[in-house]
Length: 499
Image (cartoon, rainbow, N blue to C red):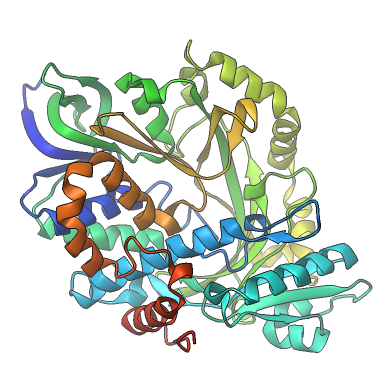
């Protein structure tokens, strides 16, 4: 047994994009703080942040239909799309700051321009998409969006999808050229290279077994290294950014805010195209509409991705169920997360979501041919031999009691749970996740370091020019930010300033 002990100002658990982002923000704000990172795998960005573990990335709410809902009066509520888009603009500003400060060299290693599209079929869906387009185009955040029901126009935009398509029902699509594809695995690795240069102590192959309050109010972590030796590490502030592994650690901390919260693991599968001729015929992220009864995270989409500087084509997701909270987790993760304080919440969620559980089990049982049938709704002439199955990352959806949904309500989104005194925070949930990392980590900073925020404000505004401002209230800022981030990040599609 090792008696190794260290003291840090900040400990980050998990070497994913969230810890990387928080670490980079804090290093820029207070360079002299001692920061330590513990990651159970051998390198950064290997779980939820890995580029092969998530297909639709660069969530700016430009094409995801589940961020816009139809109200009972028939109007379209775009408030969630506005929020996600504003959060993505914050991420773009911080990445631009890192590039212009030479902290990250080549932005195209992690971000590329790609049109974002929504596509629907059937009279009702076409009517919905048209109304959605009209609601969005009047908003300066979604400037440049186009709409078409013309099969010839659609064949120009999405030739692969329109090839050999029987046009026996109405079809429509929206398209916006200023979308992006973000490789969050690559971004995470670049941020950890930067943290290493800034003398952050990064420990790979280190598993955090336990976390408890010390007598002086700091947190003590029991950490096992690769050889099984146990170490003790303390810090005044701890961030738990371990993807699906965050919930068990939050429970071990014993903070009251972590009680009555459960997690529901959902696994995913994607089809990846292996034929370069097919890949070359598609250049867009195209989102469809989730089937009736399917959960919001299973919106089908056909994505052009840039991975290892090579164009790839992914289709999915096919949802699935595994009791693991991480791809590298244990089959006992789900059972182990049921505690006396959340058992009622978990049981209520189970009773409420029987149809979801049934749906996930059916998805797991699908044959490759059945999956190909779903793909052919997007690419009518898709051939089985051109596509392979990929297992995506595990997502753990938050379950909690809410006023609107009652006991055991399944939450679709990203949530920060922090102690009242701000000494510990944990990130739970799934999509839009990584795309909103900078906003979410700013929320952690504001909640957990309120005494410093005022003195940090000038630096925060230098890194994120729109910090503290709603972009919609300052539309002239939107055009400015779009133009400068597009230029700095090498995206080439600079928008006209909003007048």
